[in-house]
Image 1 (cartoon, rainbow, N blue to C red):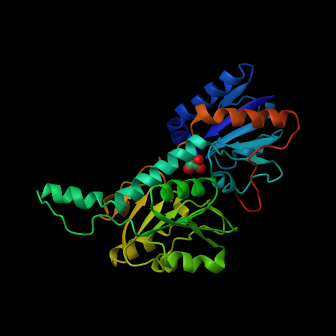
Image 2: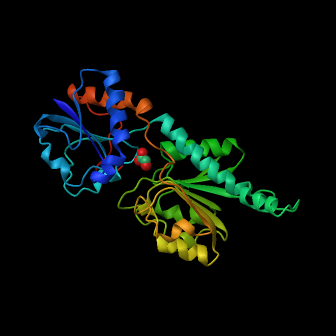
Image 3: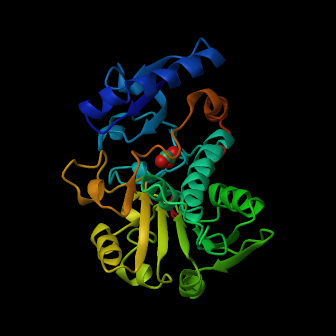
Length: 318
Ligand code: GLV
């Protein structure tokens, strides 16, 4: 009976994730030193493995673990598991919901939202020109921030932004009731939500339904000068469509942490676009130190035949 950690699609990515895999092994061993934890590709006899910890595993690699009873994503998202067409959907899959990671992503979203709202770039440009420019606008705090995806992370972001005195609305598939947040539900209210979102923050899970949701049609429904922050997944966004709405002047800018291809290729136009800020998928990185107890709990539950916590719905894909 053993646990295998698979992080990285290929040997290059596995090397880059070595620190990540090792930190998971260390933190789990600190909780139980008797665990047998193996890191891909050194997993020994695949038949020994009953619990898989995965973050962008090599596609097709999971089939060889014929005795697996549970799969634990080492991130909040599980889309990186479902892209594997060979995945056995009978095996329960759980994700991580960690308050530390939630604060991490909320801090990121707040920082970039405030940077835009408080016109930080404008003031630093003025400083460079030695211009004491006391002319409005001094900030954009009357603008509406629309959050797509009002699950654990989205609602936490909404609480923080409203506590700062900002105007926030949210959109998700199911009804939500969050104080001071106007909520829009489902496909029927999506256009209304978009048309009042001066800043759009994508915090959605990636599913068949949400893939390409940020496209020319939806981005064009945002008000003139709207700003986009994407911390969901790269595949939520049709990249050429973003360039079109930025270059036409309809959108004022975008801050992107996630991309269709990661690492973002050096020749990609996003790197040098004057209206785009790029960060290397760091809005929220799983922290083994804070999340290991919940992963260990799922391992123990699997061992005693109990249902996993934070199990995802394989039909919904999140
Ligand atoms: C990060 O992107 C995650 O899914 O945890």
